[in-house]
Structures are given as C-alpha cells and as structure tokens.
Length: 411
Image 1: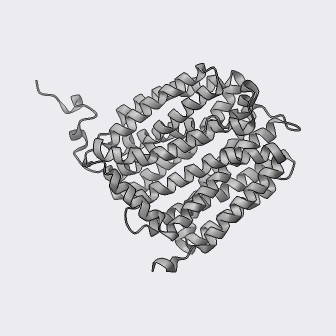
Image 2 (image 1 turned 90 degrees about the horizontal axis):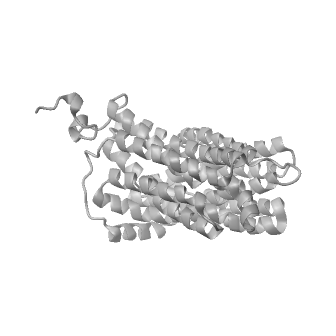
Image 3 (image 1 turned 135 degrees about the horizontal axis):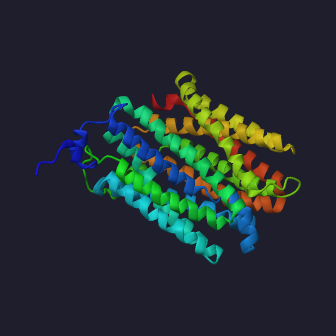
C-alpha cells in the first residue's frame, strides 16, 4: 500500500526534505517550540526549591545554609554533567540525548514528594541536576546543525527565552503551590508538567537530518578544556561568570529568609512572585548585546557589574518597595555582565569554541552552587549585612576582572 504524504510519520527525515529550517517553515516552528518547552522545563525544575528554603528549615530542622544545598547540589551536578552529555551526543545523537534525559529527569521530581528526610531530597536534587544537564549540553549543537544561518539568531533567542521564563516561572509556581498546599505539591505538579512536556517534545522536535555521528572524543574534549584553562584571557571571563552567578543565586536564596521573617513575614507565594524581577535581566541581556557592538565587551561587563553593585546597596534599605527595586537593579546588571562575558568567550576562543563555551557554563553553574551555600554562613552569623558584605567583595572581584580585559591581547 502506498502511503500518502499526509500519512508519513512526523519524524521521518523526508518530511523535512533534509533542508535546514528557515523562519516561518513548519520545521522551524516545531523545533523552536519543542526547544522552548524543553528549556522551560529544565530551568523551572532546576530552581523550583529557591522560594521553599524557609519551609525546609522548619520541616527538617536544618540551618538556612543546609537548606540551600537543595539548590547548590542541583546546580553543581548540572554543571559537572555538562562535560559528559555533550561528547555522548556526538556519538549517539542530539535528539536522543535531549529526549531521554528529559524523560528520566521526571522520575526524581515525582519521587521527591514522598521522601522522608532532607538527605533523601538532596539525592533527588542531585539526580535532577545530572539529568537536566542533557538539554543545555546539546541544544546549541542541535540548533547549529539543523537551523539555517538566517534562522539561527531567532531560534537561539526563543530557546534562551525559555531559560529565563522557565527559571522565573518555576520559582513562582512552586511558591504558590507550597503556600496553598505544601512544598511536596510543588515537586508533584512540576513532575506531571514534565511528563506532558516530554511527550510534546518527542512529537514536536524534528529528527536530526544533518547530524553526523563521531566517537565521543572524551580525550579531545579534555585536551581542549585544559588548553582553555591555560588561556588567561578566557580565565578572566570564567572568573566573572563564577562570581556573578555566585551572587545571583545567593542573593535570591537569602532574600527569601529575610522577607519571610520580621518585619515582613511574606508568604511563600509572595516570595515566589518576587522572581518577576528576573524579567529585568531579559531586557538588559538584549540591550547588552547591542551595547557590545558599539562599545565592546569590557565596558559592558564593567557597567553591568557596577549596576549590580548599585542593586546590592539598594537592598540595604528597609522598605519592601526599595527591596523590589534593588532586585530589579541587580538583575539588570547581572544579566548584562553575564551576556557580555559569555560573548567575550565566544569571540576570543581561537579553537574548540564549543568546549570553551561549555567550560564557561561549568564555571557559571559552579559559582551558583558555591554562592547558594557559601553566603548562608554569612547570613547565619551576620544576617543581611553579612550577606551584603559577601556580595560586595565578590562583585569587586568581578569588577577587577572586567577592568583587566584587554582586546589588544588577541590582536
């Protein structure tokens, strides 16, 4: 029996004629939507415990710094796994790695509501981090292989918007659900959403028609990364990524403790809504890209860090509205600096750009892991002034690194 075109499988390579996706085509729309969904789910799950930290302290009788491990271990394990999934996808395929890691990441989310101890919860969070790394490790490679260069910028923007919207929405949703039911409901709902999202991803994402398998090449990957670690110019950008993410994760961790106590006593849902300030970063990262074209990466990093510092000092003021303003200012500066530092790496990595970018992300997420827990000790001993001191010192390091960037070193 001859199959008509309407009967052909949506996943058959011939359905897309082997051509790279152009804006407006069916393949572009399906692939972009699939990657947006996957990106949304990845970062919603990664950060969903951030507004829940005070609840963990109350239920499990642990310190704020210990509760932050639910964030720091997930971020750290994701950062470490970035080094693994990329080379694996070189051998077995981009689509396979993204789908199976997404599918398996649903399991710890659905198991987490039934844990009986905080240590068991941490095991689930480590498992989530290791599996959630599958998407950010591979998505950029899929985009580069399957999208026409005329569509790549738009597709990349849609994918990155999934990162920011997912990270923000995961925090807001978990805060609302925890306030209405319990923190366990937050994991359960996100697990169910993850199942639905994974099914949609499977049926939406077109097959890889331009992927060419090759050996995993772990030795080559390690050699490339070692060469990047010896590159002083790249190391400065990696340091900026580490320090900025150290501050970003830490500041949102402990603002939750500050605002859940006197004199504010905000609910978990109200604290979740504070993550709308994240949107300031969506604006600033876009503006930073335009600014870089005019004034260069160095000035963009420096100005971004200075704005972030302004936000930190604003957070010292007691009014709730000034705290919201401080978070907006900080996010604006943080994302501007992050965008400029990541662009610096892409511009100055003379070879193995993929591994240079991967190492940037490893440092970025490792910084978030350290900031999540490290600033907790300052909170425990000195409260918000102690956290502020730690943030100022860290951002001063980022400022010095930014000032030391020199284009002429690579001319």
